[in-house]
Length: 313
Image (cartoon, helix red, strand yellow):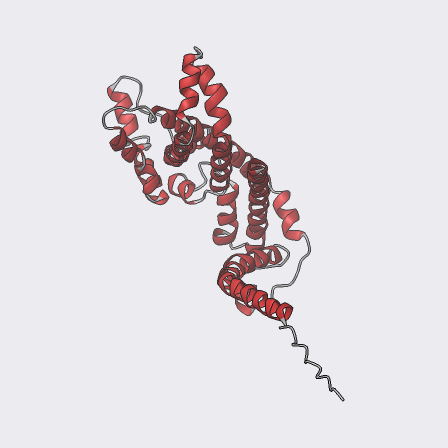
């Protein structure tokens, strides 16, 4: 009688389980690298942002700051700020200051960027000199320009007087001139940033396109309008949006130049936040103005992200 021996079927390795373990370990390692950045953002950006929003609905004064009891007062702080005539003036000054600064910085920065694409002696040296206003701290720039624009002893008025152009212009002491003067100083500070970014964008445009346009007999303006501007559009978007977000909240330059005066003619949302919070010690009203600034910046941040996403497609 023959006997048959049944061979044992080998069990297949648990491949799916091992793959799941591998994916889990990989995911944990990824979160391990991301976690420090997330914690940093939550502690130093998320918490202050939430705290500022909560503070705008509280009766937050020096006394309540020390005893830790800040009762909620609903929308009283918001109503007080929005019904204050100074808020409307500060909002208007912020709009004028931001638009004027962006137009001047971008226009001059683009002109310089195009100029420095040409080959000529001392090109690199002159570009390095133009970077100096960007490297100097803004408070230092404000103090220096305050001395330059002084009505009685300023260098600018003294030079104008030497040329017979009249040397008594109240650059920073006249309500009609102060905001214009602050805009000019901010343009001087922001030109290097615009020039550097736009210059880098111009270097990425293929030179063959300009050679083809030259062979076709296109004028310089037609070449600039049909080749340079369209191909530079992503860089222009970045420059304008980042410039807006840095300009709309400027505080230190205005404080160094005019401190919001004269007669509140240079009061912006940034300086109004400072005045409410640290001069009048009305932290609730200061938080309201700060939230308005955050909201404006957030809108343009969304615009920036959407513009980048559409350009990527």
